[in-house]
Amino acid sequence: MEIVQYKCPNCGANLSFSAEKQGFDCEYCFSFFTEEEIKKAFAENENMALDENVGEQQQNNDEFAEHNNLYSCPNCGAEIVSEDTTSATFCYYCHNPVILSGRLSGDFRPDKVIPFKIEKNKAIDTFKEWSGKKWFVPAAFHSQGQIEKMTAIYVPFWLADCMTDAQASAIGKKIRTWTEGEYQCTETTEYAVERQANIRFKGIPIDGASKIENSLMEAIEPFNYNDLKDFSMSYLSGFLAQKYDEGKAEVFPRVKERVEQGMDSIIRNSMNYDSVNIISKNNRILKTDWQYSLMPVWFLNFKYNDEDYSFTMNGQTGKMAGRLPVSKGKVFGFISGVTAVLTAIITLGGYLLS
Image 1 (spheres, rainbow, N blue to C red):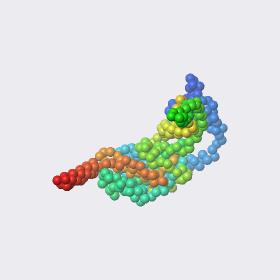
Image 2: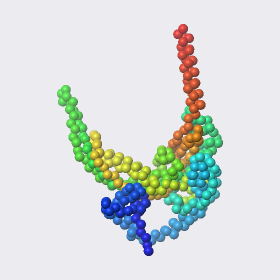
Image 3: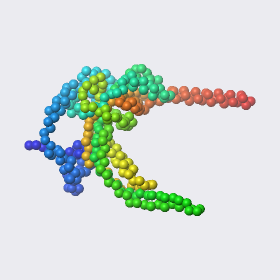
Image 4: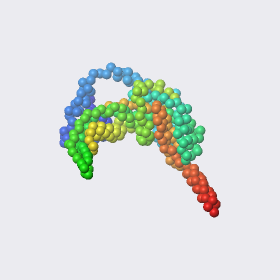
């Protein structure tokens, strides 16, 4: 007997019918769909023919699983993917040795990849230039041994395409001012404004690695999707990759937040008034399509006073982000130097005045 399951069009979790709402609820991401919306979303699934490429896809998954190893860090728990010819010697998060734990399941085979465009020497030179301008960075941060730990990592990203429905009611104001004799006149006209739009968002990037700070990955966006390639294991040669540990359901709230911000901005910008006061709004994501992709990132982690500091660089565009440690010794030395100079100036001033 063929089994049919209805999954949430957004996050892939199971849907349940709500007798009270007469529609379908997702208990995971809290999306709601009417019967008409579900029928439309699943029309292709209910009428689709056997996929002729299923055998080829399974072969690709099996090949990926056979030729990729999974290393796990016993200290922080990070899971790192490498080609079977790559030797992983340390964890790029905590710098502890990592150990081979087994083959990687083909379920984690990416759909797309953006290959690295920036090689290691260029990444190191850029890092030195960037950090060298910071006065109070500890000397160990620039050491050759530290810099050699800069690692090229393919970071797991979910790229989300969202179909949305945005509705808003607002009060728009047009303000006109003019002068009549000695008087300054102001006329304010209020308008009832309604907006409804179906908006499609393409390629919203959300990283799927819980160990990596989301703010760091957002800071090195955007990636140029013109360089997206169909995944091939050859792109992993000589590099490491992070296995995703946050699936579509886990990252969907972050997708939803970014989509809602986009919808609000588009709707508000369509209201050409001097001031706009949103009275009510109803933003909904109707359907989300996903691609699992690997994005190129140079990564350097530094532990200082029991705290981790991370530097990242977009391996395609070179955009950088990071938080640098501060040496209290250098700060104290700087303050002492400034104090000495000021003291000397004051003393010299005293001699000149006397």
